[in-house]
Image (spheres, rainbow, N blue to C red):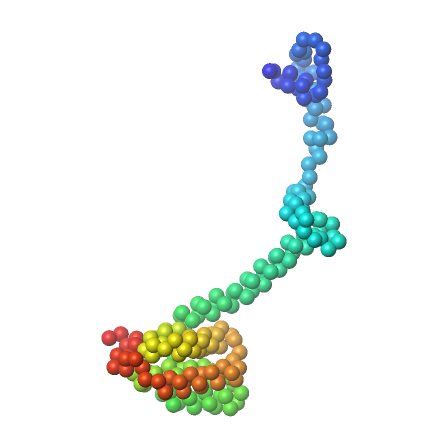
Length: 226
């Protein structure tokens, strides 16, 4: 079928008789007339089509009296808000997780566990719970090193100290409390979290529990590198 015949068919012209083959100007005029018909120009905008698509997704859902397009926009807005909140919450969590695996427990001159306990007690007396928690955890780790439960390893992180101490005592409850203490230390020292009196009390109780327990292998300190 020739292009001219296609144009004749598309134009809706009914011809009773043999096919008509228009000349060039006539075929051009028929093409212009055909393409100027309204149905070729009634195309929705991208936004309108998107809103209709969203409305189709929520067909049958309660619209709270809103038109379907507006109801879809409200739902999408709520989803965006939830995603933004999730990103805001997940950001600090990711940062805290990174510092827990990279920051050392000790970052200053060596002190004994007794000295660190004094620093923690003084801070607690002033209500400086951030300093009290940081120094108390350091005192716990230093005491384990002094008892040769842990080897003295430069740059050891709080997570590493907690895991190595848990392996030395082989006690599920102590392992959980050590892990929680390490998280508290990192969150307060590096993650910007404010400590509370309960955090310091938990570390005091952990220190007492560790001192009262004999490690599983006192003759082979964990993490000593030997």
